[in-house]
Length: 194
View 1: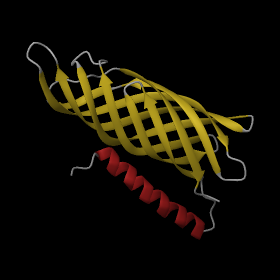
View 2 (view 1 turned 90 degrees about the vertical axis):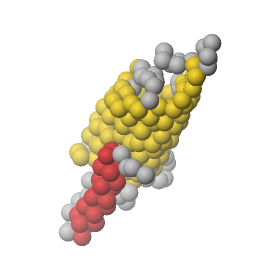
View 3 (view 1 turned 180 degrees about the horizontal axis):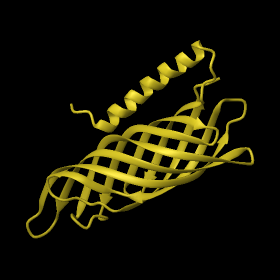
């Protein structure tokens, strides 16, 4: 099975972060905050569950890495085919700014997702046809939302809204849909630094 370049980058970063944190602690240096968590991102044609790693690079900004799956049922949203349904895997890289508000914080971010998708499509015309298309989708998107801490723990829960664009960069097979996308995401994060 081929591993997507974004997946290799995220796995490498996870290993680097673990090693880097251990080195900083061993040398008596403070460790920048690192959060690990999960999220479920919902959009009109599907759902994206992910495992997330957020690494702070300053008090008010962080880098976000996600690995997960993308499960889509485009129903009749596609201009290319009568029905499209499929799934795949991938991940994303993002940058977030954090703004304290009340007991929690507002986040604003910019993300770039890469998804390997296998889409089963069908056209129900006079002579119905169907097939499967592989596509590598790049998806730049903006997000904003609010996170609040869970009392007596180092965890937090957040909800974010996103808006971006699906771009089919590599396609093997018949054309499949690509379009603007809006989403809502529920996220849970806990701190790896106590």
